[in-house]
Amino acid sequence: MYFRKFILKAAVLAIGLSLLATSVQARFLQTDPIGTQDQMNLYGYVSNNPLNATDPTGLLQRDQNGKIIFTPTGQGYVGHGGAPGVQFFVTAGVIKTDNGTHVDALRNQSGDARFDCDCHGVTFADSELWINDDQVDTILKGDNYTRLSPPLLEIDPQVGDVAVYRDTNGEVVHSVTVSSVDAKTGAVLVEGLGGLEVQTHIDPVEPGPNGAWHDPTVDVEYHRK
Image (cartoon, rainbow, N blue to C red; front, side, top):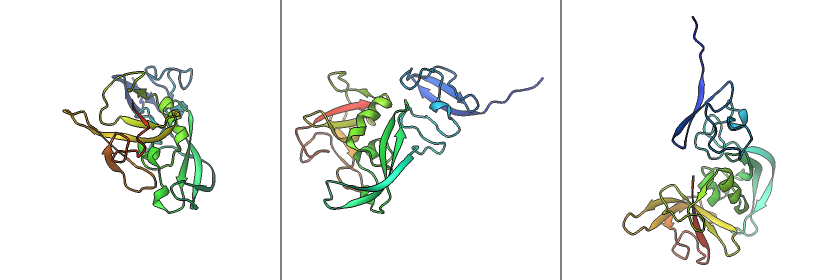
C-alpha cells in the first residue's frame, strides 16, 4: 500500500464553490467560473503557470507573494497635466487581468512619491502602479466586474464596490472605492486619490466641488467584483 501525495498550491472561492488547483497539473478541479473568456480550456488556471502566479481573488494576476505581476517593456520620461513642465522617469510595462488581457501600466522610478500611482492605481493595483484612464475599461471587462448602475442593473452600492466617473463623451476620468454607505440615508463615501497626491482621502461620491471629482457634469457608475 502506498499514498500519493498532492500539494495544493491554491484555493479559490468563486460562486460559492471551492476551486482547487494542483501545482503539477495547473488545472482547476472544477470548471473556472469565468468560462471561456480567457481561454477555451475551462480547467486552466493562471495560464497553466501556478508556480509563478496565483489568482486568489479573480482580479489582476499576482505572484506567489501576492504582488501584482508587472512585466517591464521599456523606460522613459512622461509628463502629467497636473504638473506642467515636469517629467518623471518610469518603467513602462504590462499587467494581466483575470482573463489574461494585457493592461498598460507605469512604475515610477523618479523618487517623487506623487507619481507612484494615480487614482486607478489605488483602485485596482494596490497603489503600486500608474494606470491611465484608457485602461480602466479593459480592467473592468478582463476582471469580470458587473456594472450595478443603469442601464444594466439598479443595485445599491456596498463597501468595496468601485465607482467610475465618465465625462460627457463616456470616457473614464476617475475611479475610487466605496468606503461606507449610510444605512439610513444611503449616502455614499468613497476613498481614493485626486490629481498628484500622496495620501488617499475620503469624500462624498457625488461629483462637484465638495465631492470625489471636481466636475459636476460627469456620470458616476458602480461596479462590483
